[in-house]
Image (cartoon, rainbow, N blue to C red):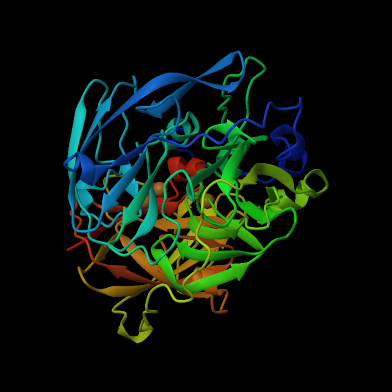
Length: 487
Ligand code: C2O
Ligand code: CU
Ligand code: CU
């Protein structure tokens, strides 16, 4: 568990790369090649919209014969995929069988603050939390994960995370057969001890840069293989890592279509060959396997680590395997794709009632920095020079209003996330966003300055405010988080 602390780091960065370990360099050969695990699907509507989860310690075999102690949601690792239908009210009950306080946050779900599962939604050990979730937004891929004060990173690392599929009535002819041509792909990185145990060790550098592992797992398996129909297959990608950005491509450089981002479907498919996905971001992509050839999904080095990235340059280098896909002739898959998905909504920045600035700092860049019109900002892990304080409301917003949030990263790129709201990216360093980042989102990787148009549609009180924070979980735990009300 990380306690809040003030860090003044200057010297020692250069020496740190060795300590910290280069990303993705494997020691012993892993035991990849098993079947891609497909989490159990809970279709809430089919069971009366009552869903029970049990958060508990468990044991999971990443390596044969070496059971790893883990945490899971009614599973040895991760949790079931929850399917919710627009218009429904889902009654969730979550039992905490851990020996630590937890919460369950429905990341990306637009629900009021009192059921959002942020740090205030505490579930003490041995108790059960009930929350009724009104499902009122369009189809999207969301997820759920713990959010307890100062313990989010460790609990997530131990295995707590699950996907949510929001359904709308019309599937638009897109692949929609769960586990067959519609696959959850939760990508994470972990470091294992020689006994197979998960080694979550946060030293000072882990706090400053986030904890990165040397082994990639997908749905809780190392370098797995998915058998897919020889046609269009929909992958619901989630970066479930604590800190690492993934830079995905297929080794044969095949192109794929990005059809959705955090907030749901894009107006039309966006063809791409390489896709960066930051912690907590989701993209849905369609991949064509009709040529019957196996395909290897791989990721490149994380190139947005600021000072650390420069230091570790000679260690990073090549793309490494994430997982493989093997087409089978068996199932008839979707052959044709819609060229239009949803109507594109234009947004009007002129209608914004407020403009606010947020400076994200992980304590590395200098002692103080001066922003125009702002007081000196001390070098701490925080936002606008302040670490998170659960007793302080940082921002008050109005229900139904839109605001412009200007978010600036200092030192390294930070994936910025807002609870209870969706935003459109107006610009990234004064340039319009690329098409695949132009839809509704709830996470944005901020490398310089991102201008966001945020739309507030759900209420949150002082007792249950919404959070906004960096989704590098070590940064979040160390205080790079603020809270807002919406009334
Ligand atoms: Cu993914 Cu504050 O959450
Ligand atoms: Cu969230
Ligand atoms: Cu950060």
